[in-house]
Image (cartoon, rainbow, N blue to C red; front, side, top):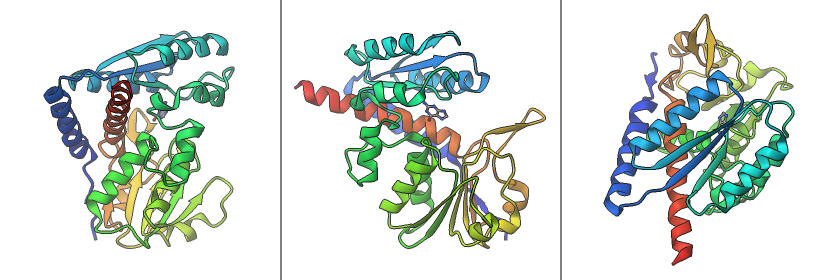
Length: 283
Ligand code: GUN
């Protein structure tokens, strides 16, 4: 069996096109503020991609780029100003932050209605309770979109997620549970991991280990979602050994061109939703 490749790039382009048409038709100008501390090269690329995509869709977007040695108090002061600024509809602080800054303190300082990453306790709590008002983190939201596009039903499917991060594993586990999947979250202390992953109808690799998931970890015909973005000898690769695993999976996302583009599209989708809710409140 050779897997069908899930084209996240095409799905994201289609989503962005639809969103751009809605924005243009209404004459809207939603605005996203992206805060970046330090010069992590991957973060710089991600944030420039977000800004380019936002601008191409008729949104406003600035990157507030602060030096590595910025203190937590200085960062919180900027977040406070952006919280107060009515022009700002969506506000995100790029992770990871430098080690001297507590990410939870920063995430918690973002107003829930502007928290387009959905990482804050308010939105994470709503998602946990299956409340439709939740702003859902962009990467899990993009993964769910691809799964619902490709699979006739998710109910009763066994989803195994490798990774328990706040950005992917935890919110995705809630989302899939809310879709009636049976969800197992595996992590660095999980025992007999390949034995577990072989039981998965849907296997999500979000562990940050290049090509960790091998062919014999995967059930024949399973759907494999690769969230990893790693570099080996300058070449991008995921957490799944794509060349091997595509011979056993039924559906698989590539890296690049799978989950990554969906994250950007969903972040902008969240920004537009935040904007609509905010102007509704002003009426
Ligand atoms: N770092 C990796 N992914 C993300 C994301 O979706 N949002 C933020 N803020 N930081 C990230």
